[in-house]
Image 1 (cartoon, rainbow, N blue to C red):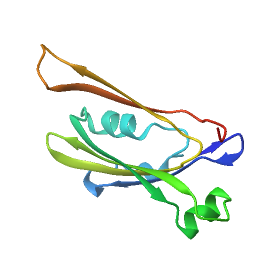
Image 2 (image 1 turned 30 degrees about the vertical axis):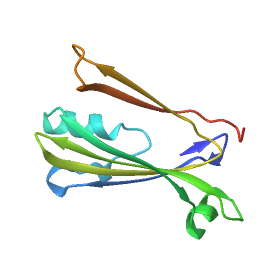
Image 3 (image 1 turned 90 degrees about the horizontal axis):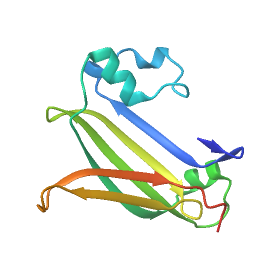
Image 4 (image 1 turned 45 degrees about the vertical axis):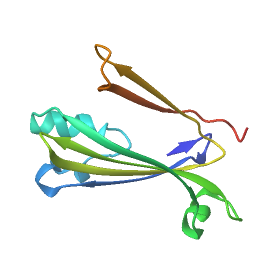
Length: 127
């Protein structure tokens, strides 16, 4: 993904062949992958598991981002499920100096049950 004509996110998606709906025949830059799978398979994804961790960008990642020296990044990985069946694995790597993560959680009926979570990535222009 480009922001201001510079690489901002390195993204990889792995979709189980049973659920891919011939997605590679479409322009992946113009479709929402989750929506595409749900619409074409007639399902609604039921849950997601997400991991967020800092990392030091490797040589390949630094080259793609146009960075010469060791540099921090942020790795967000998630698995999408339909009725506990894994459908898609998603991996996103962000430049560590150009993102900020906000998590929003809701609790229902005073219980410690997570109802919703939202991750927003904001470009910080190197600030």
